[in-house]
Amino acid sequence: MSSCLKIGFLGGGKMAQAMAKGFISAGLTKSEHIVASDPVDMAKDAFKSLGCTVFDDNEKVVKNSEIVFLSVKPVIMPSVLAQIRNLSADKLFISIAMGITLQQLEKGLSDKSRVIRVMPNTPMLVKKGASVYVKGSKATSNDAKTTRQLLESVGICEEVPESYLDPVTALSGSGPAYIFVAIEALADGAVKMGLPRELAYKLASQTVLGAGELVYQNINIRHPGQLKDDVSSPAGSTTAGLGFLEKSNFRYALQGAVEAACEQCRKVSSKKD
Image (cartoon, rainbow, N blue to C red):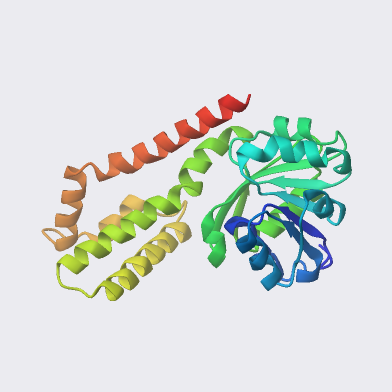
């Protein structure tokens, strides 16, 4: 993939900023080849600070890009697609908007445009993102390869069928919020038992990071339950803590959070059909 790849962002929020930073630092493009548009001054300033060009309208972004990230809010996506439709032929569009299907995206753009739908997450900001993508009907294998290279510069990436996107959104898209609550709760417990808060947050966040890496490196080798057992001595402190979590329906609560988030995604999607 050329380092002169011209990339545009329609919408310059945190996710778009994270991707732009990752693409530049990975050497997949250069700041002078990235353009963006956003009505919010803070978003504009963030892109300008990276050395990117910021335009006041979406059409200029499309005209100056080979790949266009559709990173606007889902509610305004239809109007944005209508605005750029006549400029969208022979370009690759990558959408990160929740609930906007490939069919809707392709219908809103030129019949000569190629579309890929992506679900990323906010840990892209620290290059630990978890993303999936789905190819549209006209997207090529090269488009998919390019998309994977871009997303892997800010984390991991997998190709999935579009039917997976709502549960993926509920798991990895919303999941960081569940983990932030868990870290906060772990730290609160430690503070209650006498630890300084800053130390508690450091230890809690690193513990979650390390535990996640252990699971990731042992996928298809050891079940998370086996890793849990490695920490759980008979009559030990971990066993006592796990017993409290089970009694408090911790496992059920996390499962329910993913299910509730997925159902909400499906409601949003169905309203746009």
